[in-house]
Figure 1 (tube, rainbow, N blue to C red):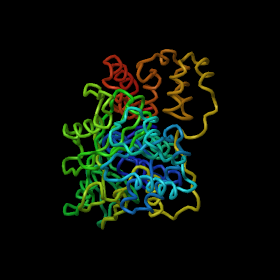
Figure 2: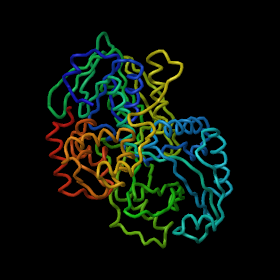
Figure 3: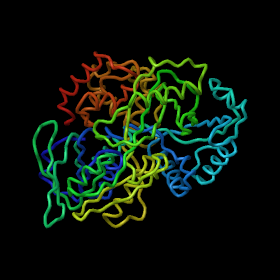
Figure 4: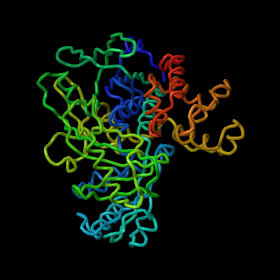
Length: 501
């Protein structure tokens, strides 16, 4: 994936996509797959906004049943099945346990009925089989749970994902089909002819140069920045997006054996405790946010809320604040309407301005492929049937043990490469074959070799240390990254000139 700003001024595109989050990445991917000449611009790094700040789930949205959004749940469950097949290295089945306590807003019979309905709606797209749980069953599965007032529970299956890499692999797929993409490329204004947008003026935030991009069609998939881009097009444009903030904690120890959907005592909302990369992911909140999308943070009161609710549910775990490895916050770009944040629909819509811009508004991560498909179908005639794959998708036939012997690497590192890159793990190892120094381990937790850093910069367009630490390799989820590792990352980025190849 080549970052070459000069290409944008030499090409006239069928489509310019503004925004390198999951929706923009997928739109660029599907349009390129259909043979269109596509440009993709992202003002920060790919997936650096909401698309790497999720609860890391590909799910139907069991709580949307409360709002009677059965069609949204059905669509999401179908998309879950598609993602499990398209990206088996990044999207994997995950078992959930829902314990129910005396006094909970949602009684045991209702939760069991909800899971039954969830499975019924899934039909042939179901992942596993639901199971009603007695008190004994619940405590057998999750012995650390609070026992007082426990009435029983229910178990069901959904899926877990690596959100940042799933987004990145859509960008990589787009480039594989001929798209030109660049991160750290900010759109400054729209170029118009007779009132219609025909391109943009942009700035390379790394090199400092200004450049123009011309395209027949322009799609803005900028999530929380939608209102800002609308007013860049027309200063008096109405706001179309309402943002709500969700924060997460990463706790050092595995608190639970399964993913848990839990009731909060304070406001009766549900939250999750999920096994994640050997740790626990706790989240999320859902509160209105009216600040700058570029500076959203996890407030102390949000952290207190999640941590205290988790401690209450796990009284014997002796959870301590010093084991919170990191926190992160993201914004949900919801279709603008008033009401409780958790009651606002996660449906999406498309809004076309008088100047011809198309904005993608709302939506949820699970349905990103469907959103992209609908968008591309609005731009060009729909195709009868379209295969969906991502960059590292497919079946891996090699055995990790054999590869560990061949490359003289620990089997856990080989498994980690397969989980991170899918079938493309061989591309990383090929780099190391030509330079033994690239076999050098630069991180123990998680295990990372220097070749992965080079691959991040040369192939995956990592331009800054944070791009690698958070979105290419997920090192940040393991706490503070050592200065020695950061030094190697900086050196690799300098040597590869920020992602050129």
